[in-house]
Length: 193
Image (cartoon, rainbow, N blue to C red; front, side, top):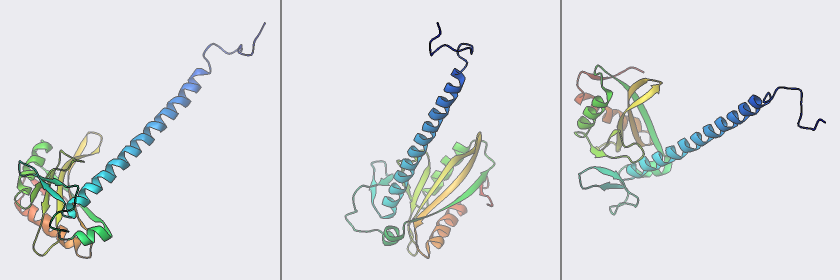
């Protein structure tokens, strides 16, 4: 006597279709979860940069600065109104090196960057070299130098510059980047985009 579960197909013939559907669903759910995590991280990163550009800096015991949670007791910092009203401008520039170890290049550039600005610790990207550069005539700029993986197994050195968005923010960024480029050794150089 045949019941509704019996068929002429070999045992387990329809299982691969079900597995592939569930694998696709799991892969899709994983991708959605990763996208949500990336968006959350990006929001936290922008919030941290915005806090620093508003002048909310906290100095730690070792002399390194970080983003503060509250408004500074001295009021808004230089360039804060532009940051509040218009947001943040970001520019990035690729750098090349003849050094084999990119980690050493980032550490060396981090030490040089401290000559032109206050050293920063970014909670969202702790392994990068970052500084807060202030100038008399220009808006404050955050410079961040990192070793970023652009393709599988291929890394590139990238300098990020952040400033409060305004008509003259490009000049502020250019000034800060030029101050850094003057200090760089011949082994680390800006590349053409």
